Amino acid sequence: MEPSLTIGIEEEYLLVDPESFDLVADPPDDFMKECKEALGDRVTPEFLKCQVEIGTPVCNTPAEARPHLVAFRRTIKRIAERHGLRLMAASTHPFALWDQQHHTAAKRYDDLDSDMQGAIRRMLICGMHVHVGIEDPDMRVDLMNQATYFLPHLLALSTSSPFWGGHEMGMKSCRLTIFDGMPRTGIPDHFASWSEYEKVINHLIHAGILEDSTKLWWDLRPSGRFPTLEMRITDVCTRLEDALCIAALFQCIMRMLVRLKRSNQRWRIYPRVLIKENRWLAQRHGVTGSLVDLGKQERTSYEALIEEILLMLKDDAEALGCEKEVAHARVILERGTSADRQLRKFADAKKAGADQAEALREVAKMLVEETAMDLP
Image (tube, rainbow, N blue to C red; front, side):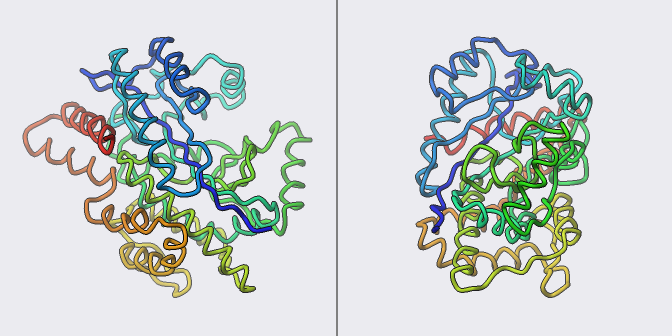
């Protein structure tokens, strides 16, 4: 069965106060009600009340997804402003504290809170997920095994979480450090087939550990709701065009792996420990550092690695009509990720005489302003 390679994008946002730029722990009930009236099931509450999640419909290309993301960000921004709130797209807030937030009153979230306790209460983080349509279950698992290689490369482009609770964390994506405190996260195991994957999931279900596979929170997983492979490793992008770039790259990687499969070839599957090391390097340094070229067994600059990937995906980008979105990776390298820009803003504010709290507010203000960009 030839996969459709359709695409769907999910993003999570934060709600902030326009004066203090702190999170709004208890937004008005009418805010989500109005979002639902405007966007229907495309918008949903998250575990914490200060968060809101959107999901695009099934699209064929990132260009087709763009107007949906623009409309969602613009609509939620407008409704938020009507309620005296502002919208922020970042995977962590520069200074908000997790223990001052409230979780959404719903059975699913009440159950998660009861089960996960402090592990989930710290989840003051936002991410971006990208689904690609892979209808055949065995192919879905096969491509998951191969695609894990590229997860650190995608993470590096997305980084937007250099601060946590008012502290500079010394990494570009501290979100993953926090998320890894939950069970069933990180790089997925290797599975020989869909039946082996199902056997493992059913083992956990029968043991009473989880109800279904939606409680697997791996960096890449077969979706528990759709016939898709869902990439979950990336931070949410402050700039919308950065998000579309990463979605396009993931879709092209999937097409490239399908193309190899048709030719009786496949991407080499490396030990999980090696992928995890590159994952850490991407967390720590983002696009300004290096990853291990696993084939050459040597550290290589991220810039050189992404150029190799762009060249490798050239035919796939042309076939999918997303050359512009894929090439935007070079723009991200040039101006930096959201994390890079946050750190520059923080350093500039401190140099200009701001204290720690003032500098962090400047970062939060910048994030609100950048979230509103690219919304014609």
